[in-house]
Image 1 (cartoon, each protein chain N blue to C red):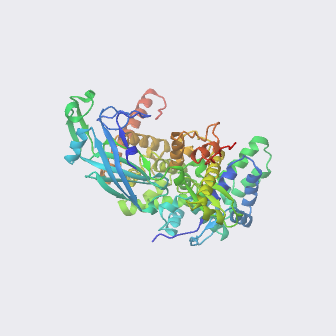
Image 2: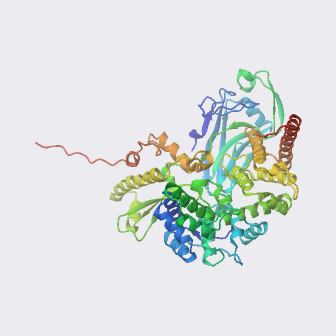
Image 3: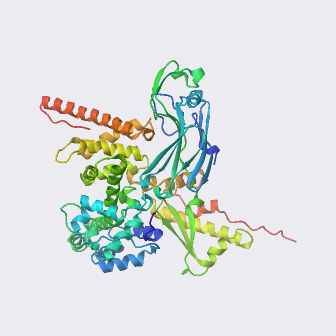
Length: 289
Length: 313
């Protein structure tokens, strides 16, 4: 996890906001050459070591060096009313959380904040800000966001939302899929005991069995989405997809991979699944005349 | 040490809820309401539909719970439920699988009746009456289906919360036991950590259901401006200062709370409020509340001078 967490001021954004001081974020022209995000994020149980990346924003770099700004990361789990801010004077720091506080996999929002109120006279050449800020005096209050990074979660691709469990009552070689909504949306695929053993082997003849199984299992998962998660609520509070970060990230992931959106009329679960896990074609034999 | 209690099996309970929400007035919905009329039938139904994840049996209320307390709990009940589960982690306390199992456990042990789950709040019909009316009343067609569906949703909401329909806030605001516990938790935390009077917090959080729901929605929503504990605590402390027992103040109205949180939201668009200390935040929110109340006074004075009614946005 690295490059995809660095954004540039020149990146497109769905929303453009105006602040009373320059802010480095996608779509905001205050720092035309600015880049901010995380160059590295290493996770371990209950902790994440992150390294912030900042470039093209001399003003923010100077404020950091002078102790007037700090690196920060918010860790949140809205469903269990948890949100904590972690501050650091240096760009590499470890953030920790207690598992018992989190009702879902945590969301992370890196940022750089103003640590002490200050008044600045801006200069585009020295500060790296846009000419629109030239000569302006700005008062930046404690807690003001100077750079805002991409919100991310460690677990969002399809495979990470999929788990397998044994159902000893299933006949040999059979399975079914369910969804779980506790702790964030996920899929649970129940298999017979023998099938569960075989799909865990990732080499030899069992590997092919696993691939074919994944095509079918993922088809079943997408069909569940199409059956049960198709309605969009009238507002964000009552829209199930917006309320569940996993569902939202899964939707974005599928669209990014060109697999479509399950709420569309034309979405076909089997087509999307077989694009993710295509069947391996047998080699055609040469005809000998 | 965090205790590990029994909970409903998550996929099975999700499957049950999904199945019940799938068709208004369906035979499955009717069956569900029929069994909710009888404690043993309800227990048998739930045990057949939903397995239990292993864990300790949760503690039990020592006395029978009345239907009116279950529908609209008292301050004492909130405190009692919290003290029954003082080490419950937020991770578990936000889960419908936990509260569903907790509610079923209380039905199994005769502490409450399954029909209580169908009761709407306030002075409306008791749960058993509502089920009878919905299943056997004179309404027909789509209207009947809608009544049945509404009653099923009430049962699920009251039992465990219903995130599918009501989002993150449902466990906190709809589930009877969940709501009591979280109110107790907030009151305890404000008292122990910030020195705010327990009874003041308990009273504030119980002004009315709409008030609690507004407050909890802004706390647990995805883009919450009061998601940080320190901001939650400062907001509640300011509201406690300004809402006193026996006196009616504007900030007790849900609409005025909305205005305050909107103003806070505008501020948090550019500032990470969680970076401030509790005292600074309390003073900041106090200033915002002052400005809001001054504006209200000006509008009121103006409309009295003009001889009309004032309306606050």
